[in-house]
Length: 386
Ligand SMILES: N[C@@H](CCOP(=O)(O)O)C(=O)O
Image 1 (tube, rainbow, N blue to C red):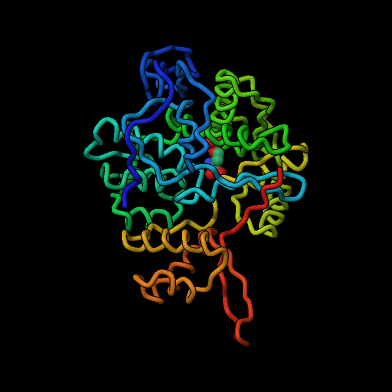
Image 2: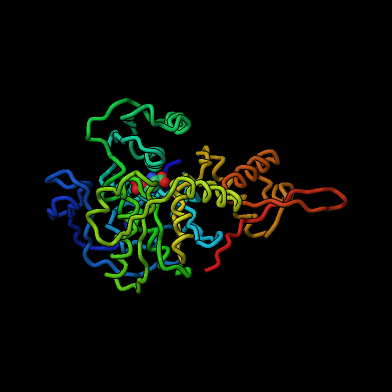
């Protein structure tokens, strides 16, 4: 299945690319600075804070994003915010491929599709990103994944990429589509827009930082929203693991405070999150630990440790029907669902509820009916206390 393809969307007018390294301003959308190759962000004229609340994805902020003729979306964004311990967390693992990278992929795939698709897109491997891009480009372009350092791959991800039809090669030429680009920033900034829209009782967004791109994107999201007329009263704090050094890009912008987190505190955070049913990476757990320490913080938990499976065409229709039916019925057993959805087999319904439960879409409990223990499913409700 390819990403749902929508006709054109996007808000702003004229776009310039501004280099974060040399300051060069170039007309149009460039992934990196055309002059020095440095990291770049887009400046979009005419952005408006005009949230389309009927759109159940990050494209509800299309008036804040660069315009595209075709939109490729799998329903990314609008991820839950939960309270855990003394902090709030934003669960980016709830995105279609299980990571925040889907927001970036949706914008990139939309631009590639808007240009009519490319024969083959070479993508530089980085964890979560390559898989997400390959998923979003399904049916639009063939994907070749370049792996610069084979000793640093997630083996399961590489296998999943190949199963999805991507080609894999080693080394890089420098011409591949990499994670750090101006369109990624546009997609990732929507995390900040969602926090503004939901306005949980927090004063800061705490971001795990490696290259600093995600923190830069959140900072840009807040800045754009302010420029577009949304009231913004949030700061950005970046969590790095002690000794890993401040990412270059964050030294260039004044608006992000960088904090070192001890690995022990990060692991404590990991355990606290796991107790709340959230499987996070160590760096996200570091952000969570920092959010608790600083107070009134919302930590971005970038990915789930369980990658949602890519379903075959028939399976995804079945799963969508089952999820919808559970929503309508409130609570139902697999057998109840089969009586409602007779066009599917009972075995198919069982498989669908199991998959939806594994993806965190459905929650299960046991009830006693007619003296028998029966497993019933309902839509999971996120503890969204603001
Ligand atoms: N890659 C990290 C998140 C932040 O990365 P950055 O390179 O954008 O700073 C993760 O997967 O948690």
